[in-house]
Amino acid sequence: MASGRDVGIDVEVVKPGVDVLAVGEAQFAAEESAWLRALPVSEGTLAFYRLRTRKEALAKADGRGIAFQPAVETRPDSQWQVHSFEFTFGEKEIYGALAFGADVHRLPEPVVKRAPSNHAAV
Image (cartoon, rainbow, N blue to C red; front, side, top):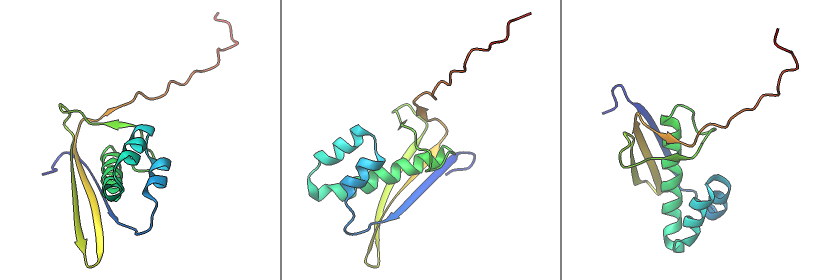
């Protein structure tokens, strides 16, 4: 399934009592946090872990890892595929995502402006 393709996976155990809205505010873009807050409380935990694991799987597949998570958008015509999964292991709820492909559309890298040189051309 992944021969010659970039792959990223993220798996997380649900931690009871975690304030997913507060964590989402700290980790997600403003639009993502607003979406999470607008959901019924009964859907918040699943939505949080699904979004978080999908974002982290994409960041890992991109090769930059979870420490650097730029805004990542997948489009219908993108070659990226992301699949979410969930299961119970004993008494633990597990959420995860698998991302694979070769085409990710990112926001442009920031432009670094350099100070003009004081040396005159000869």
